[in-house]
Length: 544
Image 1 (cartoon, helix red, strand yellow):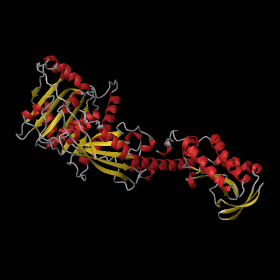
Image 2 (cartoon, rainbow, N blue to C red; image 1 turned 120 degrees about the vertical axis):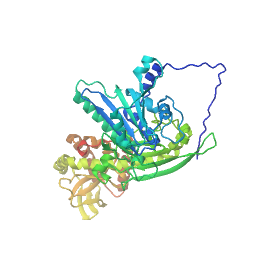
Image 3 (tube, rainbow, N blue to C red; image 1 turned 90 degrees about the vertical axis):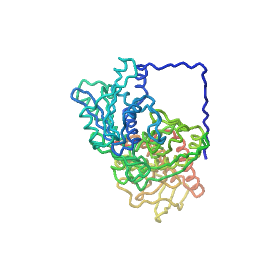
Image 4 (cartoon, helix red, strand yellow; image 1 turned 90 degrees about the horizontal axis):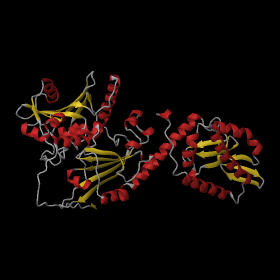
């Protein structure tokens, strides 16, 4: 059990002074709270879900003059005039449901005005009346007061609301004077394409953040259907649990002792995704978005994703962790313990919790992820080598010159045995015999793996002196793989390993045969250590 305590200090002023903030400075300053477009829209969807909406419809329009308008409609409970004014107040009253996705009473205003200068909300409550309120930042600056406009909704706005609310309760959020969504474009076509990319990115983000709400088979959250510009958003599962080769490596529920005496818990689950080639289909592998950008913790507050794609500063991202994703789920009772920020996009767990994760929970999953990554990388390198026929030139070069340097005569006597005649005498030798090697592979034979992790091992292929090379060895992965297309370098390295194998044949005797094997194993281990910090091979673009 992880324990943490949070102490809250209090300070009492004896001579209080009423000191209201400057309206224009505040509303302009709150435009820069750090929202991006995706997190801003998500903050408004949070309000819809908090209002028990089952449908959310987002429309993002740009007219021929380049003017953008954003509408977010839902069929939630809606608001009467008192509720509407409270929702539009900066620092609105705390919701009755502390588990609501809305938290600070600022998100609707700060998320919206981060991108627009005019925010309107039209809502129909139980009385059936549609009411509209508007914050216009230019009007606030002009009046130099916190002047919230109460207005009549337009016919178009009511129609948009009713498309989703179907005449019942619901709310419509409207962004006008959108000045911070796109940079300035002189060409309308370029602006339109830029907006299209923004919308596409938003569609994925919403599918990821609200996965548990969008997936009607997931019983952890209420069902919600979301559309963006007419496209129904599907849930995106970062853990690819539908894939048969996805592994759940760890699953823990951890209690936290809070200052008020309660002990709420959070959940940690580590998932190891398959390598790209091990997914059920190429489409499934592409949709999983494997790679460094998506590894790490996926943090859920009240079933809503609030943070993802890093290791909470416990580790840096590296290729070996690309297949590891960790679910971190908690509810509102742990908001203070995790220091949830205003955008609900960051957490900062107490040191005791981070220490437990780093020291006890995550080491085993990280080792498993590194092992699977190495195996998958080895398979990819093997494919690239075979596709390029990377060792063909080495085989031709060595085969042409071999007889001039071979001084041992080797005769195959059994499927795994040969007689060696060299300067030390005649000996019976257990050795790998390859009877039907691949065409052109009679001197240098790449293998997916070798016993004891050796980088190379002498063998006989089609009666000829040959060497096997271990493609899963880190030396092959990190030194060979980047140069497989460079014949001269590959030929030079292959020649070195073949020469080491041939030197064994030339000097072989019964007394030193075991020392040769120990020497290969020792050298292979040393090389593994020496190349450990070198970059991993990048995936071949031809295989995308």
